[in-house]
Image (cartoon, rainbow, N blue to C red; front, side, top):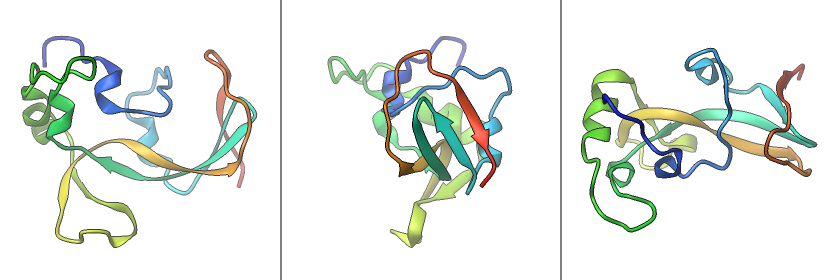
Length: 114
């Protein structure tokens, strides 16, 4: 896009600092340890026009986010067959909590054997 995108626009539960671009695309079904919590990574998250709205004030100020994602990322469907004909560019992943735990900013994040 030529400018930074605030991670808040993506409404993520966790934002992981990682040097490997889009490594999470390969994590479907794998276990991830975040702090004391264990997650099972699931499908990619289909994105919508909401990403173009400022999460702090609701203004539409980066409408080109979806245009950029459409050119850059493959389309994915919603998980579990919900709305089967709906597909938009995927960005990030859904996760299922396998073992609840405490997570703090700066905690180690690692893949674990399943």
